[in-house]
Image 1 (cartoon, rainbow, N blue to C red):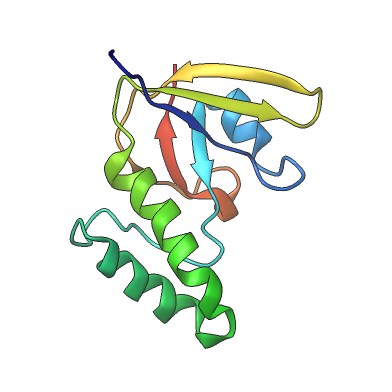
Image 2 (cartoon, rainbow, N blue to C red):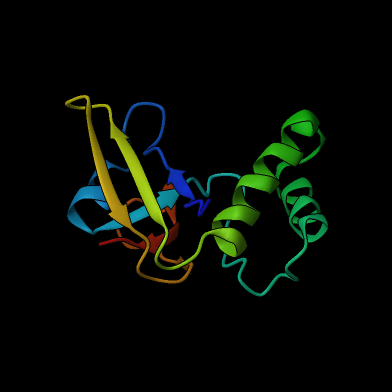
Length: 120
């Protein structure tokens, strides 16, 4: 059986990144705890855990592996051609797309959601 991966990406807890998703045709994840382009990090979960720990501090130690894993998968496991779904809170609709671009760090628009990928 051939399996296809479908990613679910949300635009924040109240849809803060909705304009990025809808108007800019990008999916994005929050960068409030990890600022800067992480594409140059070694492609290892350990490297991502270290940078998340460094930037967030010990106050959120339990969240470090979760956040690092999300960012690692967004950068290194999500592939062009894979499908993505965005459950939009504003109108309770589901938006489907296909990943069409590599990971980029982009500050235009909402800078709290700067880790992005193009979607068609």
